[in-house]
Length: 355
Image (cartoon, rainbow, N blue to C red):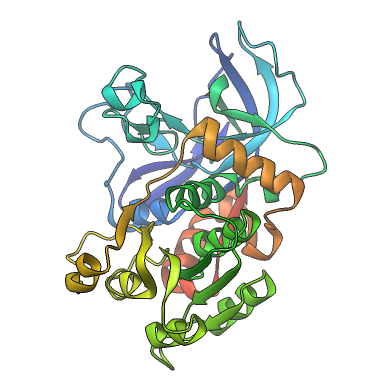
């Protein structure tokens, strides 16, 4: 079969690769329809290996590079393994892709995304940038044919937004701020509104993304390059700040700003990944009793299942977030290189092995 295989930094090859074969017990064999390019995929292409095992196989999966990439994919069931009775050939499914050990303290607490041996399809074992892939049954969530396959492919990033909103403990009518209107930020906006946010303010320097945020229901959009975003949010909230602020940009400036956007006893939820020190005014955090909350990934049967349902019912609109649809052979020149040279031009690029 044809697949996009990571061999090394800036060395991803679209090539013939062994077919995964018949599914094992409790597995499903899928014909991949679409797979999104994630920021992590771009980082592995430009700066890897970061998560991809190279010298030793992953402890949980037994796989090391070269491996098939892709962890935001959907497909149609081709065959089911022994013990799978609730899916059948032809079903459309979105795939969660997080692999957990089931034995560590966090798995026992059903915090499987914090598993001490966490592995991910497309990074720790073979993923969905291929014609076929086998996946565990628990990862596969059926969606109706009324939901287009490309739209369903946003289930994984949407589940990140669902998890973040839950971590923020959003209550109906509360005000929120979204810092960063990339794919995750715009999904976070939609999820928060669908879950009952009263007003939502989006902080984003890119004008097209600000406009899209308004089209998707934001109360107001703020250009942090043109005005002080903290002062703007306080102006909109009678000087108090929002109940919850979500950091979805992953930059030093955004992370430093977020606690100042929330009211006393408010919640600042950090979703973006950033590995540099971030300066913060801790006096306002301590004296204002503000909560700083980390939000990582998602849980398959809580957040991912909810994301699939919200996409299926139209609570999340995916189409405006898809900025390009390309074939597998175009992954590097028109996918990864396009994102590397002009991130601001794109939100989500989808790849199909069928084009």
